[in-house]
Amino acid sequence: MQTALIAAEVGGSLTTWGMFAQATILVKLVMISLVVASFWTWSIIVQKTMQYRAIRREAQEFDAAFWSGEPLDGLYDQIGPEPEGAAQKIFAAGMTEWRRSHRDDGGLIPGATARIDRSMNVAISKEAEKLQKGLPILATTGSTAPFIGLFGTVFGIMHAFVQIAEQQNTSLAVVAPGIAEALLATGLGLMAAIPAVVYYNKFSADSDAILGGYEGFADEFATILSRQVDS
Image (cartoon, rainbow, N blue to C red):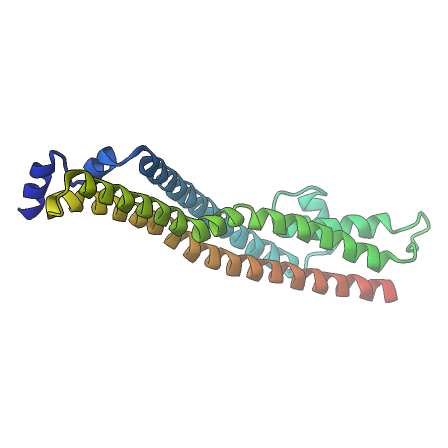
């Protein structure tokens, strides 16, 4: 009731859209940028959630196939030198270098183990780039959105004080709209920043865990190949 009376006195609306419509151009630009950042953040969150889920599923399936007892050469022939799965790519990189390290007489070219390790490390680095793609955007949004919203809030409050000075009236009907639009900018900044920070931390931890699994697999695979080299 009080809100409706205030809105009627100032000739506007204190709904979200009404506050946006009554805001100054600069505050409107701030609000629009924060809404865009929020949608961008959620699109990355959905995309990364689906990506990490698919990567975990693929890693589990390949891990089961790798330790099933099937000969490694047969598994490599089955998935090919350029598979689609991340774990398969690491395995294929090691096996490709393993086969290239054999001479025509069946012997191994010196330094094969080191080259295999480097090949798998390169494959892991490429997968790390894919895993972490988009995370800097979440970090940037989480760290800057509150300050962008605060900038809109400060400017909105300044505009409210200007209105008070022009009308020489400190009634709630004069002060409330400017303060409301200023706080709306802060709210939009937090709406964009909070999920960005939460999911950035989650995806960073998930990425580290997945990469740790890749590195562990590469070490185990290198150990298996080194045994064959020694034998």
